[in-house]
Length: 126
Image 1 (cartoon, one colour):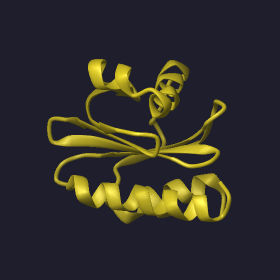
Image 2: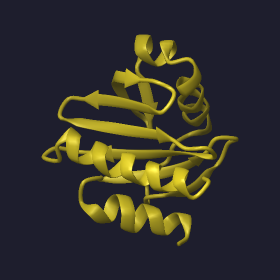
Image 3: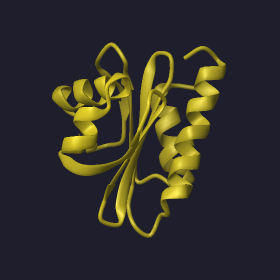
């Protein structure tokens, strides 16, 4: 499956994610929903946040121009919230999955979808 296929079928296609992107850990956007643009500055801050979450925890995280309050950040997952909306980031060996969700989608639904794809990609070496 192409990287765009993962976005279209495994993330947004589940209806538990509104928009999504797959970022390379070494930089670049591998695939993204139309109109969902994660800037190079945002990409750098997000990838660094897995190793040192303190800037995200103190100043929030920015994804596609939207600021989120950091709920949790560790070396595997970062969760953010903005009102009733949120974002889930999951790091694999080579990529970062970014899933944005909007109300009425529940955080648990979105988290499950992104985390499961992350587990799958880790299992196949990505």
